[in-house]
Amino acid sequence: MHHDRSPSLARLAAASLAGTAIEFYDFFVYGTAAALVLGPLFFPTFSPLAGTLAAFGTFAVGFVSRPLGSMLFGPIGDRHGRRPVLIASLLLTGVATVAVGFVPTYDSIGIAAPALLLVLRFLQGLGLGGEWGGAVLLTAEHAPPERRGLWSGFPQVGPAVGFLLANGTMLALSATLTDAEFRSWGWRVPFWGAGLLAAAGLLLRAQLTESPRFQELAEQGDRAAAPLAEVVRGHWRLVLLTAGGLAVGYAVFYAVTTWSLAYGTERLGVARTTLLGCIMAAVAVMGALTPLAAHLGDRFGRRPLCLVGCVATMVWMFPLVALLRTGEPPLMFLGILGALLAFISMFAVTSAYLPEPFEARVRCTGAALGYNLAGVLGGALTPIVATAMSHGDGPPWGVAAYLTAAALLSLGCFAVLPETRPTADRPDGGRSAVRPLEAGEAAV
Image 1 (cartoon, rainbow, N blue to C red):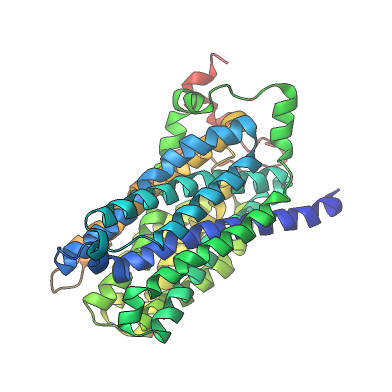
Image 2: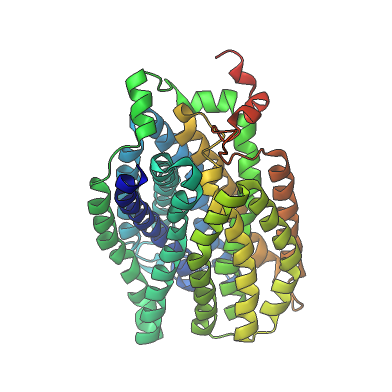
């Protein structure tokens, strides 16, 4: 039986991975531009520090809109299928990203420039917030239960690929153009390139088939009438726990990829290309190891890997700051890699762990909401908080303390969450164990 499914599963995994890679390319290109050029171009009346903070502020808006994207697209996924969500979200993010490449700077249109930037960043986040739930569910619901972690882990490779694409493009441009050229038009090119990527992604996704689990729900007439209301009423505790659990992953990822780039170049005087090279090498290793971590989740359970990731984060944050502080590329690489390995042990299993406790009828909304709320908790503020905390002359231990505290919060949330991996005696993956958490269930 598995033989006839595996080719379509492989194609499905590839399309999901391509989609998440493109969506995250769009999202990351903005983060890198915010760290490198958006401050002076769009907030020229601010001091350099305030300009960077303001640019990271527009960066944060993309996170705030992500849960709104889940609220918009999640119910579409639960009512009309996972597939339409994948097409619509990719289109929205793609168009918004290309548009960023055309926004005139502050010098040309004044205050309208940062305002436009803010609106487009908001739309980017809206699309990304819808994307993840659809991509992960389409893969997870096609996969055989005992391999669900592995197959649904493939969309989680997307962020690494998107990151490498986004930064590779930025790096190539800043290496080949003069500083003046890069500032005047070079930084816009990666945003325009998003159009080509989105077109390719749409072609791939147009060929996908709907998830069998959703087709079952549609045939049985068991689709939720108001998925968002049902999630808020019956599963709110589960959404909050998953959001709290995953918050540290976002915090670590964006501290390492966005804040450390700004800190290393501005405070330590490390060459931008050198530091970006270190970060990209570490992200490449992380991407390569993601399927392995996802497979371990099938083998040992989702929760143990998440707990290990939290503990590893708590142990590693002070060494991370110490290693970054040296300004030595090999040591900086080591610090960043350690942090990303702790991160991926949680995030590789997330795509199986998050949807499993939710009933199929509200799964797209519930899982996406938990995932994207975690982004607000962990990702939105981290570059801002970390930048503000590291303006003194000494090592930024405050950043390490902040990330350690985030790991402690997440550890507490994962400790309360149940294990959901399907086993022979629990084919539903222990969803029954979640029942007491859900007050709204009794009425059903």
